[in-house]
Length: 259
Image (tube, rainbow, N blue to C red):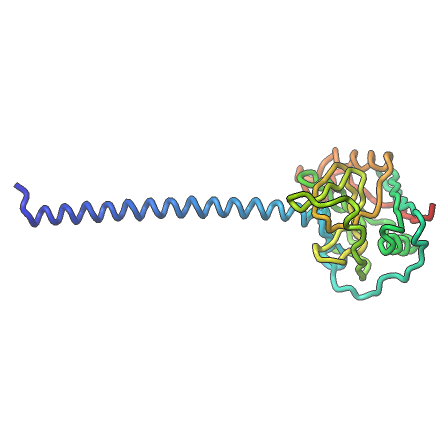
């Protein structure tokens, strides 16, 4: 027969075991909840990283990567003034890029993006883009080839920034806050801050959704778009989805002319 003292100890032990079970269950729930939160954060960081990477921010020091989106750059301090306006703001211009992979012609409308066109003409006239390479290709989430960095590593720029322009040119943002940058669009990379574009730009080779914070300033001709698509098909070095293109692209000569 169980004594009252033994019964009390048994009840106390059972109570203790129930408490331990509840604590263990609570710990498991907490671990599951934390894992879910961590996974969600990781997804958001990946998505944010994709956009920041095209950058679409651009230079880490001097100018703007989709291309996150795209396309981004991380400019350094702007030490020089923007070039004085020297173009016809009502005219159309052509940004012609001769590369080792083929020629790319970009149509630009100064009426929509006068500061951007003026800056590109000023830089091209000085041979700024000659001998540079397109340093970044993205093949997942955003589909862009990023160029315009004299250093070739995403950290270079002209030493000045230009204002954002034509941000509503691709239409009203969708519910997720993005607009579609159609294949063939050329836009400025930036640091994700307003008016932080410099010399880096990205070429969209497949429809890409990005926030409407990247100045769309040009359209690639069919021949040029095929060149970019051929580079994209070769992929990224090392089999990655974001990085230097496996088929290296070097700019031999770049010019901006009025048409």
